[in-house]
Length: 109
Length: 115
Image (cartoon, rainbow over all chains, first blue to last red; front, side, top):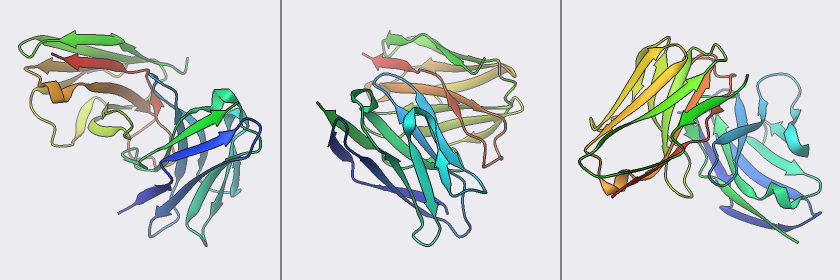
């Protein structure tokens, strides 16, 4: 069965600092992977997805993620955090029912 | 139009009430979903409709009854709920259910409180 693990339920960064949110997957074949963001009292919104092709994927709001098969990882990064990035982030694998436990990102002024 | 619209945004209901949640999409998606989300937890899949037929029921209690009147609409009928059913209920849609590379588009959710 496919699964994803998000390391770190809470991440806190200063405004302007690098954001790194970790996701590792477990799958017998390279999966399709997604990152979603959820702002308070909102639904989930797709940030980016990896299907095939280029392993460095660029998404909305300056986020990107790199698919690393050797490390079974799909970590989410943003070079410079903004206050508006504070939200809950979920990594997901292709089934639409398999989400990670989520990481709460806090951005300090 | 890339929106999934859910109504109402907030709902408070008693344990003997009957209410319905509604969801609508006009993206031509053939799969629609209901999720339940508790605070600080990921969404939990409840039901999947594919081509207007119920494909997945994740052992959801019968007090939740889904309905898909047509390809654009999805309802969730609620009856005799318990306080522990209080949660954010999310509707989503995607091009299809089996396509692993297709993402889900989520509505803003209905915040349900059972008193």
